[in-house]
Length: 502
Ligand code: AHR
Image (cartoon, rainbow, N blue to C red):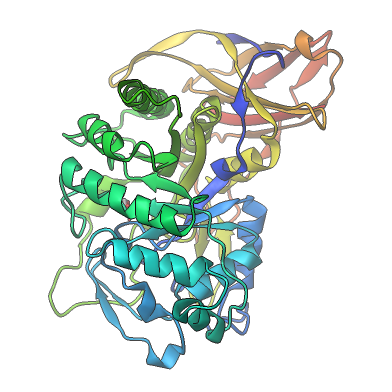
């Protein structure tokens, strides 16, 4: 198969916000405990943070991390996880039917975030709690000194405020699985009150209101309208969540998951703008895609879920998907979708970071390694800079059961005028044929290829797991060439590629 592409620095989509390369650490399974935090592990520092995991997080290029949940946050009492560890209560976590020891809380996480060189995005509990609690955690985290709560933070060892800029107003409040889930009317009113209160403390905060927990929710669309009608003036972002998996062996549809993500983002933008028009408000609401990934949710639903009233394990192995090359190609394509919408998607969090549907895996007392999905994330975060560009695609198409006819090729491009560095991200969705691609880059003037990397494998089901942690990695794509402003490259079947140029 073959395809053509035109990219030109004169046709930008929008700036690539570094926050697009965010991730998510929830108190869930082994993400925190036996993930980022494992006192006694030979690689852990005096605070119990695994340095090998930290190194991988830095290599991944994560910019921001959402914390502490997820479903977990809707029952969370943050104040029980500050101060001397010996005094912290052990609590039941309803979301994941686990025990929460509170060994790691806001201060520890902020310390970890500094070491990981990431910004913290913090979610407040709007499940079992409300205004008072949101104000308390905001004061504890961000007020410099002179009040009881800020003094408590200082006494707990953090002199300077954590200065958290971005706050989520609860999590998935439309979902019946969520503690305190509610109707759009109820949640919208509550979120508006909490937002106004938080902005009274600091009018420069960026606030993310909950959109639907997926586009498949019966209230999807109507939820966004009702919630935005009530919160439009006070929030900067609305959240999107989407997870994809291969179902019934339908690889063709799975490979086209990003088509669905494109449609999802476009729908939210249209909905938000319609509410803006209705309210005569020229402000544009941005999207925080604060949960996205490939996740085999059907496997989780079929797993032996822990539900017994006397069974509350510590750091159980939950949602530990092992990702294949195929999964990583789809995953890289989801990042392409985010980049293509950089004008409106200004924040995104890969759910999640360690062990739980994660690019980084660990064994207690043992190794930490990169899943297949690590590679497209790290490479996109490293190369996508400056502005996202429109890509004009001519590609053969194929028919999918779920999304109709779709292109074999998907692509995004970025250009940093300040440094003269550009990048192109490509997916060949063809399951059997190599794609010969030509890219018209004459609009850039003379440029040279710096690197071309491809993720593919004769076995698209190949994985990196405990037994073989380095089976899959990125390989240089030797087929790339450039002549008279046209780039030529061969893209193997089911592959993700990145090319940088300057
Ligand atoms: O990321 C796993 C879970 O997925 C989160 O806790 C929840 O918000 C979503 O349903």
